[in-house]
Image 1: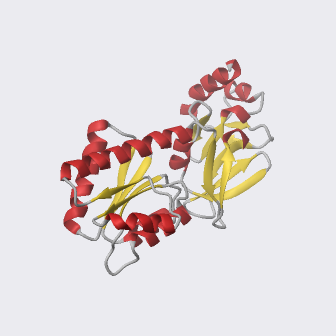
Image 2: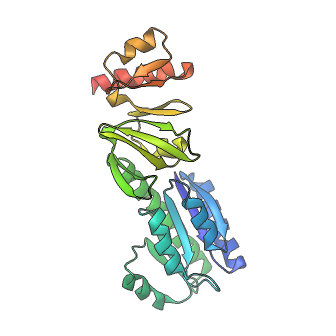
Image 3: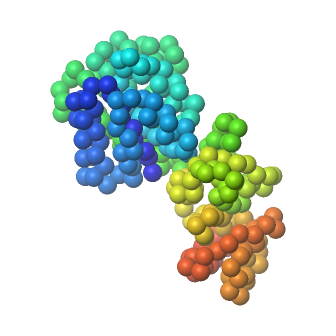
Length: 256
């Protein structure tokens, strides 16, 4: 799912963009949500700084008495390096500034054009971001932010399981074939990033990669055990309600 953020220091224009975004999500049933609409960019940074988010950001380039939109975009890139940024501006000349600062953007929307055209451009921006987001999710890798604020790309085939981290809130333990990492995020957000058919949230505290389960895992489920074994010998809990689905996924994986 894409999390959409809107930031403009003009409350009236902010309300217009917000309503257009809401309408498009509802009418076209896009896998996206309006996470925040605000006049203060700090509100955005506070959210994405503690979450693992795939974001689409509509930013006013001119933000009075605060960092300008370009500086906000630079900070967003620190937390969401693959996020989609769309600048909304009344001054087209600012396009060159984004090139000068080396900021990759999805697009620009001019405020001074016909409002219906602005609305169409916003709809297309959401559509383009969603298309790219779906394409990314099928490439077989996921970008995560580690506990020490580093970003890394992890191949889905290397992931064994992901579990909640008891020591920290909003942190997860990512188990891969060569070790483990503490990363930012929630199981719900991580589950949306993974390839469908290969990963399952088998318990409220675990997501497992079906492709990396031990060979006798299916027997453990048939025997009614509440834990299954991963290919590296570790184990995780399986909820009773997830056993049948997990068994079907194992069978499907064996056929592939």
